[in-house]
Length: 255
Image (cartoon, rainbow, N blue to C red; front, top):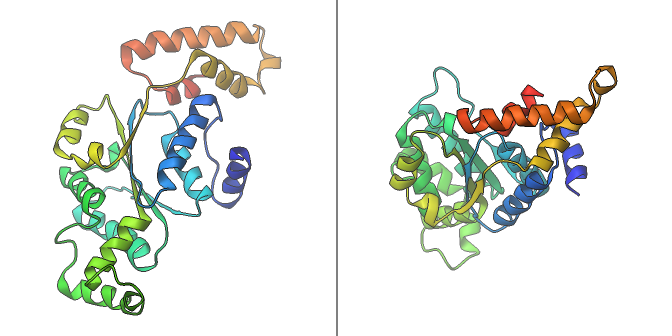
């Protein structure tokens, strides 16, 4: 099923640079279980380069959800981040579109970015994000649907309830990042409102499988046996990984 979904995704969007080894399939299953619940949010922690972003993109495709991640450039700042959050809230709160907001370490250019995400995960809103002038036309789009329900008393409350139901926030953090512990401590929604998935890398069997797939085309042209090359690559990688905290993605590039 995952292979079929992957082929469909690659035909429609772009190639996903992941190998369907046991750890990746487990990760996809756990992500799917969380994101298929209304408003389920995730903290993906551990080593980088294990396929977290690609797995989340694939799950979003399986669930017919819109996948959104900020596009960082040199001029990206608080103004651009607020604009991106508003796009996501429009999709989830007004259009009732199941939306996955994916944010990684390198996209958290300011501490306030994570504070906004913390507020979004815990309350379904970011205080002060909209001016009254901006909020009025957004809420007016919900008036007809507001009349058909009896749980929410105000339009804004109804807007927030839809965000909580349709928006899933996925925060991907490398535990070797110097600010990892501080970020988690200062933003409690990351561990009391999110499902936490810890990714510590791959097993030796998985490294062997991935290396064999990567070397498949060139092996006939090489003098050494496949086993020698792969065991040598894994040995060098595991020695380097312990010393320099190298990720599985670096292993694939190395091979």
